[in-house]
Structures are given as C-alpha cells and as structure tokens.
Figure 1 (cartoon, rainbow, N blue to C red):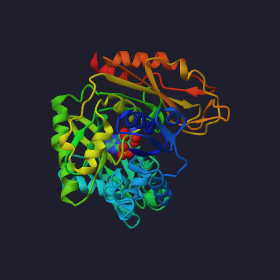
Figure 2 (figure 1 turned 90 degrees about the vertical axis):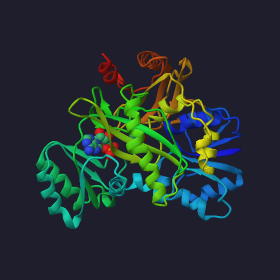
Figure 3 (figure 1 turned 120 degrees about the vertical axis):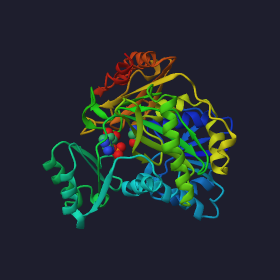
Figure 4 (figure 1 turned 30 degrees about the horizontal axis):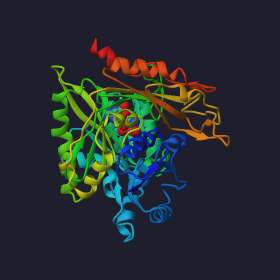
Length: 436
Ligand code: AMP
Ligand code: GLY
C-alpha cells in the first residue's frame, strides 16, 4: 500500500526507514521530508504542507494513499485526524495519530493536568491561573518553595515552560505570561506546579485507544551545552534504553501511568489511535526507590528519541499501525531489539539562536555501521547535501551495550563535517556515571 508520513525532521527520517522496510509498503511519501528521506529506498518526498488539509486530501486521493502517519504535533492539534474522519472519501484512510480531543493531552497543559487528576495519575501538584487571577497566582507562588515551575497552557514551540530559582523572577514571569502576552494566546492560562527533583526519561506508548504497547524507554538531552547547560534546544542527542527504568520501575509506569491513561481516554470517549509520549520524572523516595511522575504528555513520538527508539523496533511497524487502526493491537507482538542505541545530534553553530544555512555537508557516505538521520538538510541543485536548519543531522549507533554504542556514534560522526558544525560530547555520560 502507499503510505504518507507527515513531517520533515530526524524523527520522520527514522520513522520513514522503519515504515519503508515493511513488505506492505509500496511507496512511502514524506510530506515535506528532507534530503535524507528523499534518498531512502521506496521513499519519495511530497511538496505538501502538513497543515494544508485540503492539499493533503488531494494528494491522498490522487496517489491512492491507504495510511497516513503523523509525525509532529501541529497537524494533530489542528485536527488532521478529525478532518480525515469527517470526509467520506477519506474515511477509510488509516490515520495514525489522535484527533483534536486526544491531542489536547499535549495541546493544553491544563487539560493534561485535569485529566491526570481525574484518573489518579501521579504528577506534580499544581494550580492554574488566567489573567483575571494573576494576583491569586502570585499569592500561590509565595506559598511554594524554589525552584518555581511555570507552564504556558498552549503550544509555545517548546519554549512555554520556565523553571526559575527566584521568587521575584517567578512573579515577574507569571505576570509577563498572563498579562504581558509573553507567549501570546498560549499563555492566556498558566499552570504553576511543584518542582520535582529526579531524573527525567521518556516512555512511548502506541495505542489503538483500548490496548497498548510500551515502546523502549529513552532519554534525551535538551540543553545545548555540555553538562546540561545553556539554552533549551529541540534535543542534542538521545539514548535508549534507560538502564534505571528496570522491570520494577516499568511495572509502576505501566500500572500507575500507562494503563490509567489509556483507560481514562477510553472512559472519556476520546478515540486515540497513535503514540503517547510520556515525559517522566523518576523521583527517589526516602529509601531511594524511584517512583514515576508525569511531567508532560505529547501526542506524538519524541525527537531525537525516535532516532534511538525506532531502530530498536524489530516488528513490522505497518502491521502494528494496521492493528492500531482496527483496534486489535493486542493481537500482534511488539518485538524490541535488546541492543542499546545512542544518537548524537549535529547542529549549526549558533543554534538554538541565530545560525547560517546552506553549508556543504561532507563525509556522510563515509559513516559505517551507524545510521545518519537527517533533520535540517536539503539537496543542492547539483545533488550535494546542504544544511537547512539548526539541527542538521544525527548519527545513531547500536551495540550490545551503551558504552560501545556511544563510542561508535562519536567515532563515526567525526567523519561528517561542515563549516560551523557543533555537537555535544557528553551524550549519555550522566547515565554511564550512575552505573559506576
Ligand atoms: P515540558 O515542556 O513540560 O516537558 O517541560 C520542559 C522541561 O521543564 C522538562 O523537560 C523538565 O526538565 C522541566 N520541568 C517541567 N516540569 C517540571 C517539574 N514539575 N519539576 C521539575 N522540572 C520540570
Ligand atoms: N525530545 C522531546 C520532544 O520531542 O518533545
């Protein structure tokens, strides 16, 4: 069958590789894709904007697309899945990604917090405030201890969460968000929540709305600088699995978080066919036993976690997606490679601030035993590879154990270069230190 994947990042390149491997896939169109997806066997980039639903409709009908897989959150929150369900000529197209109601788990922090409260899912204590309640919000901040966590309710391009140390700054930021229009409409409502101290990790779930499969755990590295310093980015690297998420911990994740989340969606009549990304904090109790708390939900896979998680999936993902669509996910096994995966993101100098694009990328063809996933790349007129974004490409290595996967990724990425390329040297090192 022909399949359409929406998105253009490293996440989509990693998903594209797995989807195109399926014997069921004839052509995989990626809209709009990047130079990496264009070069994969059985893949073709399609110049369609994932937010232009009428254009998607024309494309799907013209190319006899039977399945649409949604990579990023924006089309989900804007209702691409509902759009397909509402049009008789698209109704039989299998769309992997929740409708607008389910995507609220990501699209509204207030919705997500209330949902967790309703279903007894462990998360930080919180209150939410609108502009009219700004003084109440300030009074609430004064009751809390530093650091202070402020979250814009809506999507704010990954920048809507602030963790600040001083009360004055927290008050100033709360006012800026609520009445100063700091994040526009996204911060018309703000969640103020308790700071959770622990180690973060990402857990991914594929669900048909009733049954679910838990995908491999991963950890991403969001800050631009070594030792988790500097500005937040879209992600500078990731590793999978996360060693401390052992069987006992994952049992708690499943019992306390995954099962009640899927049950809760079903009980509330929210049809959810797609991925749930649960951002977790593993918080040690007085005895040092780790307990999982939800930091956030996303209605999609993570980037760059997918670049480590998807290569570890051995099952046919198209078959899994078909069962997601039919509501029979319990009928197929999810087979995961026991090997470790590590990915290091190579970015443009200056990212996440100002950076230049259009630089010639050298050496990708020299990389061995690793996969180079493209994010911000494009093909020049002569077929050369050029940078086209902040996060440019990532190198994923797999090995029997994490230290070797990291070593291989770092060794091989030395072969790739362009003017002003930058990467973190310490991806995964915090986890390796925990093991010593
Ligand atoms: P989010 O966009 O909700 O994932 O938040 C961005 C980042 O802020 C998270 O990855 C955490 O590092 C941090 N964060 C969010 N909420 C909390 C919290 N309640 N306690 C501690 N850190 C938090
Ligand atoms: N890696 C975090 C995200 O995709 O939101």
